[in-house]
Length: 435
Image 1: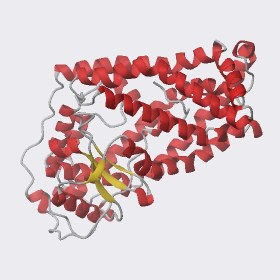
Image 2: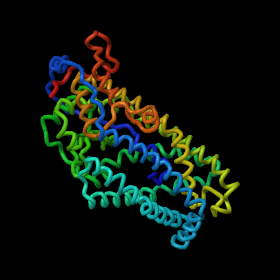
Image 3: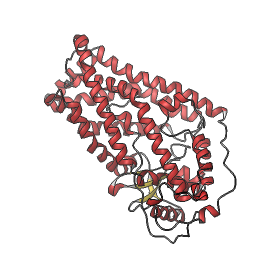
Image 4: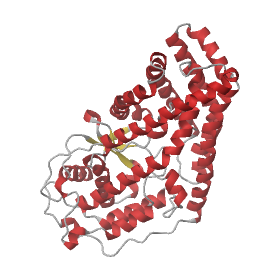
C-alpha cells in the first residue's frame, strides 16, 4: 500500500552506492577473457509458474495503485481526517504535538487498514509461489519495526513541510523539494547503519577468498573505502539479490546469503562489477538530482490542484488549507496521483542507469558468459519473465527486461574488435583474475 510520506514512491529507486578496495595481486588484462566459457547464453522461456506470478503481480499492482487513491480519498471526503485532527488537538494541545499526535494516529489506522493486504501480498503469496522462508512471527515483527521506523522519521521531519506551508503557502512546494535533497542524502548515510540491521543480521563475508577478489575488482574500478557484508536473508526469502548501500563512511557492499549460495563465485564477481558501475558512473548524485526534480514537479502539481478541492469540497472535508494537518491525506492522494503519472519517466531513467552498469560490468570483468548465466539464475530464482509486455516495462520495470540483459551480455565484446571501451578511463592498470 502507498507510503505515508508523499515522496516515498521515488525513494526505492535510488541507485546503489560505493564499494571499497584493498590491494591485491592481479593478473594481466585478458586473463578473464581467456577462461571465458564458449558459446552464447540462451534466454530460458518463463515457466508456467513464473507467468502466473507475473500476471497476478500485475493485477495486484493495479489494485495497489487504486488503494493508494481510494483510502486517502475516504479519509478526506468523509470528514474523518478533520475529526482525527480534532482528537489530535485535544491530545497534543500545541501545534507541534498536534501534528505528531495526528501523524501517529493516522499511521496506526493506515497500518491496521493495510494489514490484511500486506499479509496476503507479502506473506501468503510469497509462500504460495515458494519464494519465502519467513515465519509469520518474523513477518509481523518486521512489519511492526517498519511501522516504528516510519513513526520516528515522520515525527522528526514531517513538521518541516507543514511549517513551510504555514510560513510560505505559495512557495512551500519549492522549499520542501530543496530540503528533500539533504534529507535523501541523510537517509542514504543512516539507513545501512541504523535501519537495515533492524530487519536482518549483517556480518562479514564468510568466503574470504571471494571477498578479496571482489575488493580487488573494486580497486580495478578505482573505488576506495567501504566493506563487504553478508546479510542473512535466507530467513526471509529464497530470492537472490546483491546491492551497494550507504554514502561516505557508511558505504558497503551487501550480498544476500541466498545469492552467495546460488551463484558461482565468477557469476557473483560479475554481478558486483555491475554494482560498482553505479558508483563509478556517478549514478547516486545524478539520481538524487533527478528525483528531486520529479519531487518538485509532484509537489507543485499537488499545490495547484489543492485549490480545486478547497473551492468545491472544503465544507465536506472540514479543512480549507494545506497547512492544516488534516490535509495530510489530501497531500498523499494528490502526490500519489501525480507521481503515478511520472513513474514512466522515473523508471526509464532507472533502466538507463542499469544498462550503463551492465556495460561497465562487462568492460571491467570481461565476464560475458558469467554475467549471462547470472541473469539466467536471477530469472529462475526470482520467477522472472524475460520478455514482459511494453506496459509492464513502461509502468513497473526499474531494470531492463532480463532477456535483453542476457542478449547484451552475449553480444557486447568491443575489446575483441579492438574498439575503445566506453568506461576504460575509470579503470586501473591491471585486470584482476576471475574467481
